[in-house]
Amino acid sequence: MKIKMTHTHYTQRFSIKKHLLLSIAFLLCWSCREGNPSSSSGEPHAFVQAEWDGVKRGDVYYEIFVRSFADTDGDGIGDLRGVTEKLDYLHELGISGVWLMPIHPSPSYHGYDVENYKAINPDYGSMSDFDALMTKANRLGIKVVLDLVINHTSKTHPWFTQACSHADSPYRSFYLFAPANAVQAEIAAGHVPSIVRYNANEWHNVESGTTDYRYYGMFTSWMPDVNPESTAIMDSIYEAAKWWLDKGVAGFRLDAAKHIYQEERSPQNIDFWRAFHNKLKTFKPDVYLIGEVLDGNVDNVAYFYQGFPALFNFPNWYNLEWALNNRTGRYYPRDVDDCMKAFAAYNPDYLNVPKLSNHDEDRTMSQLGDDVAKAKVAAAVLLTMPGQPYMYYGEEIGMRGVRTGGDENVREPFLWSAGHDAYRTTWRTPQYSTDASVLSLARQQADEHSLYAAYAGFIRLRNTYPALAEGNLTYPDPADMLPELMVYIRQKGEQRIMVLHNLGTVARTYRLPEAVKHPVASLNKAALWQDGKTFVAQLPPLSSLVLEY
Image (cartoon, rainbow, N blue to C red):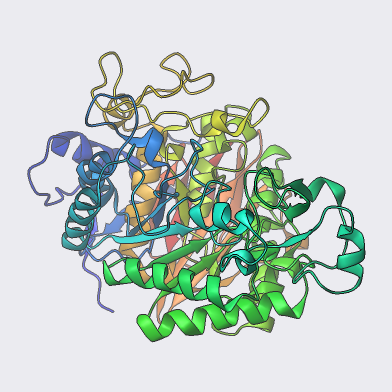
């Protein structure tokens, strides 16, 4: 692929938007040489960055909790119209797709206990609001992925209330019931589909109707598990999935994917998801499915690739968090490579989906000790490694939060601007992401050194260079590296990009094994120096440098 190269100090052609001048200033500063390490000889090498052709080849997705994202009607609750109005922001950022956490009617604030799979939560708007969102997303080339929660429903779902009403209800087979005085015996006899062992905390009293029975709900009494062997409920779920696919969604994020059958590594779990995928392909041949297998064990995640085309890569984030907090980067490229090899062993067509934190985890900034420099390097690693990277809303501005005290703490309102913020939601008073602790998006857009600027720059870089978006991964032997250095090469065709990070507390140099065309971008004053035929990367603490061979 031929890429037009330009010097760092170029004027990028943009459409006229409110942040035009700030964006240009950011792009110029983000990729320019800053500083002159006194220990270096020779000359600093000029930065050269390709001009982005507008193709979102980086395949970066953005997770949105609608309730906290953007409020347009003043009721304090985020809504679909808010997402629609902020799609321009995401488009300018270079986002390829959005994942909407549950938007269906639900008795809970989070929506993971669904009451109606074919309706919109009235707090979020109407079906016409959703259709308008889809229209704009399609126009901007942004795919929409919905959270589809089929491991369980809400106990207020009509299916469940009718199933509880009497033992011969047509909905009885939708869920898992057993006589209250014989639950263990029924499980032992194999009479409870998908359940192989008894755990008292997972069986709950039926509150009305057949009160002499108990029902199974692994997570909570509010979330009765469905019966995966019931053709009737699966037909209803398939109908709902088709409903949304017909509306144009790209596909679904599938919650609690390893809990369909109680035994996580049961072949029945794999068979279930394989059948689910095959069925949805009859509705939409290129349907996108990504599973949540919340597990730090690489092989446990890899195991589920037999049933899924894509899975979130939780182990890579746990390894990266450790690397950043322990100032040890040399092993991380090997960790990533080991993950991908494990995935490929189960599914050669796997799609690796790296991420930092999400709605079920302490926020990235909080896990990194509220250190903005660490968060910038985390973003740089995420956006230069293989796969389809996902960002959680607010990561780009350094929102904070820990789950102690409730998951709401990691799902707080997005900070659009300081002072009067017309879009900020107020459904919850934030404890962690406040104006005192997090700079708003508007303020960070005005600062070329902000965390937002780092995210925007690396997303643009990923969208620009095919090697970063789709290239393979190689790396030096970790035994030959200083502990704090992380070095790897991404290559597609003849295009080769080297990425270097210094996770340490002191400046380091790295002598390049061969000639370099030019440096492309840097964080925290990292630079390339050349003395004759010798090329040396100068890496201050918590810095990153991107080079093209």
